[in-house]
Length: 290
Image (cartoon, rainbow, N blue to C red):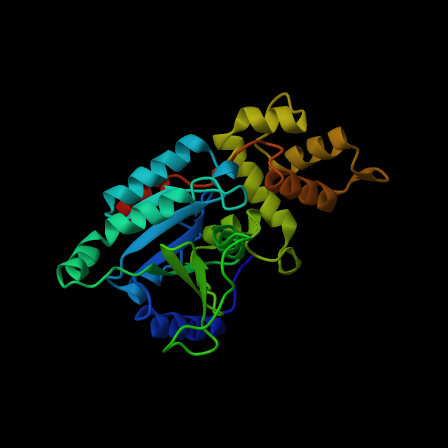
């Protein structure tokens, strides 16, 4: 199965972000904590260049806590500040402004030295679909914050959202769409719900997920799907899951039902918090390319 998004959107999204970079002090790059590498736009470094950035590993509650900690350390080693957050529950959001201030401290101090009173930090959030951009904006905005409005020098299409007295978010209409060559990236995005199911072959996505989880989280797979052991043959695994759940059409196993159930239960956290990639995986890839 070949999974591909819509490359035509790339140019428009890139132009929108590039035009607005000059209006902001810092970028908040939102990624899915379950797939921090695969949910990043590969062009983001080129687009934002040297603009200060914080990588926000959202949905951290759905990811393996230990693996997420590894990713935070990985980004730190790359010279990038990373925070594990849960925008749905509001966990970890207070750290965002604190870390933004640290990154912008030199700029703030220069302004103070010139007698200029520091204004609120202006930030732009970028991220792929389903990473939680809208949820994060709404959670940061809160119910009692001033209404969104236009600021002088900003076109009407560019809305600023005020977050207390310390932060202003530029709500951009464009979304960055990743274009990927590695189909495993597409499968990871598919299993976590970043790509609409309607354009996917869920059987292939479920096969990928079961093979990965069978290797990395075998105990959880056995327990959830009532397996004494994990079969090497994926068809046999589908058969056993189908029989255990009663997914039969006559004498045949309903493989579509098995696939839908596997994907739904992974996304519904029925197997617990899961991470579908680790920094060590990325380091192996980078090592093989060198």
